[in-house]
Image 1 (cartoon, rainbow, N blue to C red):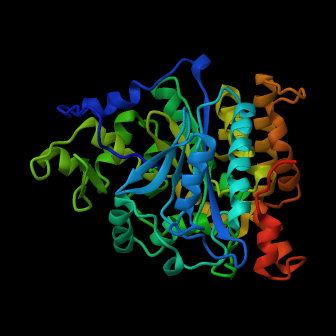
Image 2: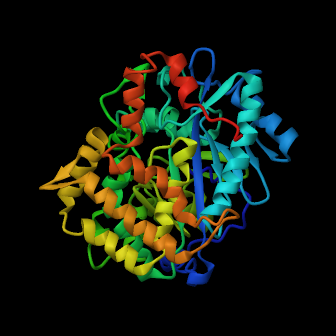
Length: 458
């Protein structure tokens, strides 16, 4: 979840709706300038009892942020005197509402660059975590603590979002406090390229989720899903989540996306450090009427776009949002998969060929099916396992063409090897978690923590 705070920037008033469309158009880049950015969320638990790490206290997430700043040259960011984020030269560490720790990585030229950054981050947080008795788990959900048992991060935006979530869906507060994801940000050259990438990514969303489903446990036991995180999004807020039908139409455009965003209720605006609850207005209504003497600005628009949660989100880049958080062995498979598919035109076309025949209703049904059945999902005679194997071959082809090698001589397809091995057996990460939970972990949370914890690389 983006942590954007709309304050402190030069206020450019929105005088005409074309400015909203130009916002997207201005972000187009030539192919040689495309990069890959990854946002990694991780759930943290107290090692001795598997309960969610609190925000406050000597063994809390805030204390960890302070120590990260002291030891590793991050700059603390405060809200009402509390450390709620860290800023670095090209990256940041932010917090989801339940204290999930997120690295918003720098834009990298290759997945190798992302891997180096991610490894440094894991070494830092695990080193401190070991000292504090905190474990970071390679799972997509908190395994034990219920929503009411989790301390909320004291950010004003969450104070607005939390109560609103209860009005528009049954599972929004679970999303905020219990779940963790890994998201990938990709560039586009212009409107046509952006809409094609949005369409293909939205079309692949059920398959993406099935391939990397990793949230079968919560509230202390199996929950009946392989991706309960994915299921949660289906009952969070229908106005801002899920699938966008217009992306599958020939008329898809920046203007259509802007129209969609204009019709979604807002969360907030910020003026001179004061936060205003805007949940009673859509952005279109705010643009027309203003609010308490305040007029809509481009900074407000930028902030509003970060509060939309479809499976593919458009800002000044495109964000893929269909993946559960992963173990360290699989985390880099997500940007590798995206780069291999979306940064080679014929690979993107081949990926689209896998799913282009589905109706919109089938896409929605398959997405729900994927949350429960993972790669055992089927459409007609075609299994998601077979589609996953083919999609991974397509992604490998794209990465092989890029031919960007690390110091060991491996190209970026090396990050797909573990996922390929797993998916070729018809398994997603959750299937392995379920097997271990019922087998060697003997349904004991202490063994779950030991078996799924991030560790410092040897």
